[in-house]
Length: 90
Image (tube, rainbow, N blue to C red):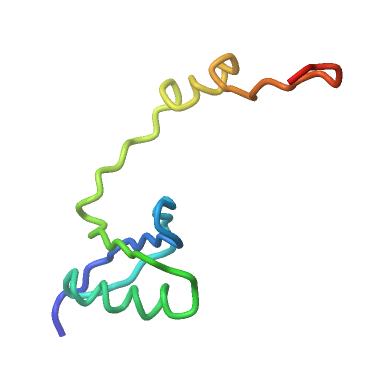
């Protein structure tokens, strides 16, 4: 048997939805990975599209606390929306 690679699988439930990571499959190539992904992640779940990505081709960032933790202290950047008071006129 040939060399198996790990492919990450992303599923889209409905047109317009984001593709969401649902797992991984091991396969010798992308075509076989797609067949396995369909079998494992699309047979019993709602699905309109699948992506498979060779894990070795995914660029990953390294954990850098000064970069990734910096956004947590910036609550002013998060929008909670505006709430109308009970007496507001529309």
